Every structure is written in C-alpha cells, then in structure tokens.
Amino acid sequence: MIPIKYNLRSLVVRRVGTLMTVFGVALTVSVFVSILAMVQGIQGVFVDTGEPLNLLIIRQGSQSETNSFFNRDIKGIVGTMDGVTAVSGEIIILLNQERTTGGSTNLLLRGISDKTMELRPKIKLAGGRMFKPGLRELVISKTVSGRFKNTGLGDTVKIGKTTWNIVGLIDAAHTAYDSEVWGVYNEVSGEFDRPIYSSLLVRVSSPEVIQSVKDRIANDRRIKLDVFREQEYFAGQTSTATPIKVIGYVVAIIMAIGSCFAVMNTMYAATAYRSREIATLRVLGYKRRNILLSFMLESFVLSVLGGIAGCLLALPVNGISTGTMNFQSFSEIVFQFRVTPRLMLEGIVFAAFMGVIGGLLPARSAAKTQIIRALREA
Amino acid sequence: MVAVEIRNVSKIFKKEAQEVVALQDASLDIEAGGFLCLMGPSGSGKSTLLNLIAGIDRPSGGRIVINGDNIAGMSESQLATWRNHTIGFIFQTFNLIPVLTAFENVELPLLLTKLTRTERKEHVDTALALVGLKDRMRHYPRQLSGGQEQRVAIARAIVTDPLLLLADEPTGDLDAHSADEVLAILEKLNKEFSKTVVMVTHDPRAARHATVTRHLDKGVLLPEGVSA
Ligand SMILES: Nc1ncnc2c1ncn2[C@@H]1O[C@H](COP(=O)(O)OP(=O)(O)OP(=O)(O)O)[C@@H](O)[C@H]1O
Ligand SMILES: [Mg+2]
Image (tube, rainbow over all chains, first blue to last red; front, side):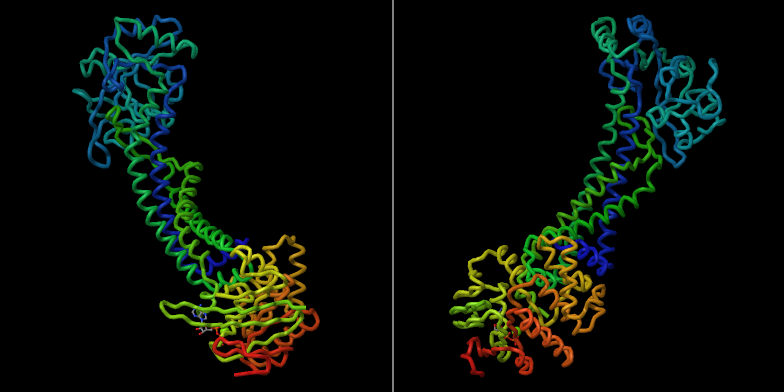
C-alpha cells in the first residue's frame, strides 16, 4: 500500500486546487444538507405530533380536519363507547391572515373544548393566560405569533365580524399544533355560525381498545366517519415535504454532477503532474491496483473534506424557523430546519460518492501510466 | 555464475507508421557480482537495454533470464513483485518523492513486504547509514543537495537487498565531487556487498569503476573491447 501520507501531503502541496475543489464540493453538500434539513424539519413536525392513545375522527372521505364537518350528536355516540375515556369536539376555521413579511396565507383557527389541553399534554401555556369562556379571546402558538400581523400577546385581531383579543401564547413543542390559533369552541362556532364539529379527538383507555372503537364506528350505519390514530393522521401529512424533497434532490444531483467534474478535473491534473512519481512507484514494485487505490483514496479524502466543510456551512440553518403550505389542510405549517448528525453523515457520504465517481477515471488513467514514457518525459 | 542472461533480445518502438529499432539482436551474459558499464552515443539503446533488464519494459523478441527466471513470461503484476524483490533502480534524476522525507522514501519498497514496522526501520537505518545520510533521514528531498538526493535514491534501491543494482546515468546530473561519492558507493556495494551492478554512463571516468564495459551503437551491442 502506498502510504496515505503521500496523498495527504500532495493535497497540501496543491493547496489552491485542493481548497477550490473542497469548496465546490462543500457548496453542493451544504445545499443538499440544508434542503434535507428542511424536509427533516417538516416531517419532524408531523411525526412528533399526537399521543399514542388518541384517536382522531373526521368525516368519511374528507382527508383532513379542514374539510371535515359533522353533526354534533355524534360526540355523544362516541363518548359512550366502551374504552373511551374522553372526547374533545373541535372546529377548524381557515383564516386568511397577512404575514409580517408581506403577502397572506391561511392560518388554522381551532375552536377547542375543555378537554383539549388534557388530551394534548405536550402543549403548554408559554405566556399570558388561557382564554375565559364566553369571551372572544384567543391563544396563539408563539411560533406563529411572530409570523403574522397583529398576532402578538395583547394584540387585537379581526376575525369574522368581531374583534378578538390575544391573551396567551402556547408552546406546542414543535408539533403541528404550533401552527395554530385557538379560541373557545362556542365562540368560534358562533362567530362563523357553524354549529358543527370538524373533528373529535378521542382518548381511549388502552391500545387494545383502538381497534374495537374503529370497528364500532365502521359498523354504525348512523355515522359515516373515518377514524385514525392521531399520530397516524399527522404522519400521513409528511407528504407536505415531498415537493421540497423532489426539488432538493434534483438540485443536489445537478450540483453533484458539477462537483464530480470538478473533482475529476483536479484529479486528472494531479495524475498528470505526478506521472513521474507514479512511474517511480511502479519501478519500485507497486502494482497498477496500488496506484488506482491510492488516487481513489486521494479523491475520496478530497471530497470527504468537502463534505465536512459543507456540513459546517449548513450548520447555521439548524433551528431556523420558517413556514410552508400544508397541502392537506391548506394552511401554513411552521417548522424548523433540523440539521441532525444523521443528516450530516448523509452529506458526507454524498460527498464521498462524488469523490469516488469523480476520481475513478483519473485513478484508472494513473494506474495505466506507461512507466517508460512517463520516465522519459522531462 | 551468470546472474543475467540476455539472448537475441531486440526492441522495436512503433511511432505511428515509423519503426525505431532501439535494440537489435543483443546477447550478453552478466556475471553475478560483476560491475558492467554500458556506454555509447545518445540514442544508441543503453537505457532501452537497462529497462529491459529491469523488467519495466518488454522486449520485442528474445529471452531475458535473470537468476533463472524468464521475465518475458511474467504478468504485469508478477513483474511488479519481482522488481520489488530483485531490482534496485537508480535514476539520473533521482526521482525521490518530493512530499516524503528521506526515511519515508527509502521505506517505500519495504511497504510492499511483510516486514514489521521495527524491521523496516532497521533496514532503512542500515541503508541510510551505508550511504552516509543517517543524520538526514527527517529531511525532505528539497532540503538535500543533488548528491545527497542521489545517495538517498541509492539507499532506496538497496533497502530490499536486491540481486541487481541498475543505474541509468546516476552521475549525469551531479557535480564532479558528488559524482565521485556516488561512484564510490556503487563500487563499495559491488565489492563489499557483492551486488551485481549495471550502470549506463557517458562518463569515461565513471566507467573506470566497472569491471566490464560494453558499448552500444545504433541499437547494436558491440563486441567486448570495441567502441564506436
Ligand atoms: N518509448 C519510446 N518510444 C519511441 N521511441 C523510443 C522510446 N524509447 C526509446 N526510443 C528510441 O529508441 C532509441 C534508443 O533510446 P534509448 O533511450 O535507449 O537511448 P540511450 O542510449 O539511452 O540515449 P541517451 O544517452 O540519450 O539516454 C532512440 O532512438 C529513442 O528515440
Ligand atoms: Mg538513456
């Protein structure tokens, strides 16, 4: 084996070319990691949402709470089923709100019941107070609060025909509920004159009950509802990230092709510049495959350095919070970029791939160096 | 005992439509422990013959048997291993690896053997001591003079204790003083360590260190005692 220090020191000797190539690979990897951090962030919101013993019930075929509505009597029917310990009847209204950055988008307003907080233990009051029943008051996720106009604590905002006061901030632990505004069910339903429920959130006593409740609802001819585990319902919305993922991969692949050529170029230059060294190593007894491996390794190291640099470049996006349209609920979903260790590892593996692919042809040509010809060249 | 047996060896280089006969029907025996000097005008085929003996080029015809092995029959990979064991090659331009220290350069051929790290260190130390450069082993080639570089290159050539030492104009790039040092080392290796040495040179003074001198002219190996 040709010692790795030969490659490392050669990279240092050609430091300008090395740095430029490393930087090129780094840019590609940082774009790749940033986009995946975004995908990860969006998916994470949905994956983290929901309690294991909660069921979400919506109108049959409605796909999401936003499109769902049904008669309020149903709450009574579901509430008496065996194994059901609590039911929260809720209503969803989409509000078109202006963003602080300009433009407007849909914000999800949930009319909640007195069971809502109990069924969602991850959600905490983070400032102000909860609303009082009978008042047109709202609490808002603190993540959403800064993103829309007139949504700070103490602000008043016009919803429907009346003015509502924002009296509290909630922290929904980066779940999907962090993209919502909440008011009392009666007030929300009254304001919009819609005496219906959009969804029921149901707590069951044990996992075994889940199937029986599902069966009971499926077999009851009076009601036409879909029953999901709360976690499964939200997990189904991770497809929100799909368009970003697709665009991300396309961009990353195009950039990766560019970087492969950059690596290839650098490595071809290296092999040409060092053809006499290669010939000397061959004379000393190194085989073609030793040369091939050595230059592949060099290309690999070059790219992995780029991968590491790319991860470092992408690291500052970690935790940045932003929003995108959730096409299931047609409302804004707020998420944070998540640069996870696993993602960084993927970035480095991605870089390593570029190194191996970009280095293959130059290393092959190095291995095929004609000893006599290379030694005769001055 | 014959170390190298060359029989009717020729080498033809094809350049586009043109054919260059670099070596024509050469036959030669090199005695084990001998010091052969190859001389001749530029382009006469000296390097070609040396490269064929070194197994870094293949003859167009004929037979080269070294220590009983016909090297024409070996694969590229077998030949590489054979070179590592059997040949020490010394270049006119030293060809040290610039990013490696003197020690690391000399160690290179040993990395292909099964020797342990400590054994390798012993061998490298011995080789560098033999060329009088033990105190320079941490130096990079650019920190050495031409003569010192060539001595490191000699250490690298002998570190595997090869049967044959082949040198292609080893003093061609050196001043007279350094050239004398290098020639003295080659002579010492030949006399005291019974290495078989084949040296290509233009320098008649260098040739005096050899036991046998043969001349080439236009690809033809001239009979003993005849020069062009
Ligand atoms: N790889 C090659 N391709 C084509 N022609 C070659 C090649 N190697 C050598 N030759 C030709 O073969 C002939 C002999 O070359 P060789 O290098 O053996 O000469 P030499 O005696 O070593 O000369 P010098 O003293 O200049 O080193 C020359 O005409 C040279 O041009
Ligand atoms: Mg020559």
